[in-house]
Image 1 (tube, one colour):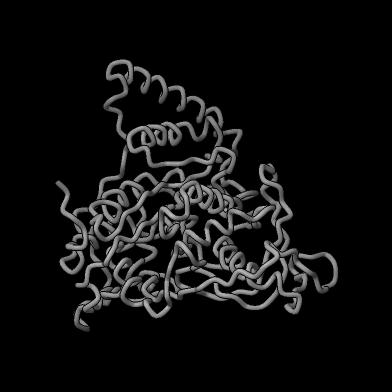
Image 2: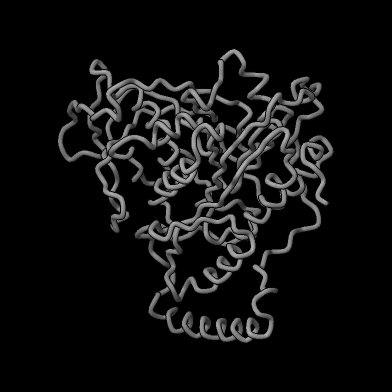
Length: 402
């Protein structure tokens, strides 16, 4: 489990508050809001149609909140001056790191997505990192009328950038976040595992220095014999948990309150909410399971789910490992259970606890001051991302825009 990420806002965020969770009570009476919503929607669409008729939709722009001219970072945010620049940062990788990147985003995060396009995803030298990325969204839970403005803005953004995948059968609510993650994993698996190194998932408030990532993997983990196209590997900042899951909920179900079955077993590492990387070999293994691995898990256990998959691949085939029900999730007294293995054989994954992945200092653990070794920094606002990329210490890591 991990503190809220894309379902809660930073104080610096100019965008709206969290989307409604399942069963969350609304402050306003929907019956009073509906006539107003319909009226506003009609006025909006009449205006859009009139404008589109005149301009053939070619100049319609997705509105973004204007950015402040200057960002003031808190004191002691950065410690670049407290030590020499590591020598590995000046050693180019022997070959580029090849990634398929999934950014887990919310429907209304227009500014965040544009900021990521303009910053970390723009100008990465292809000699260091080559990647394909997509933003992954669920369906608008507000409905046709209430969400009409957002849906129209989103359609324009999709048409302009062609980098957004919307899962129309998965509502964009916390209860369905794990299904978004699994569906993004299936997108990664559309490419043959010999064609890329890692599938990387990050939240929309994570800033990644991809050149640094490539160098660290090549120069700091050579002793781990890392071969992502041949070996199961999981990389991220690790926490620990003991909850496993068994697939008991069918895909396509309409009841978002349902979750896969919980069982308790040995402690295992899992990648906390900053992000994670699965080797292409591990992606191929996970997606070849039949039935599919459990992925109907409510937020905030969606990141625990990733570690539970890896641990289940290792422990479920071993009859000497004991598992039991949990008092919180089972109506019966706690008793021993025997989870069905995903495969008849053990899959032992190489897990790398990457300390260069951390939260922005002071915004929840594991947080740390930003240094030369910081690879992926979590919980930055969009203006902070833009300002950080322009800092003298790191701006040379991206090619200048032409």
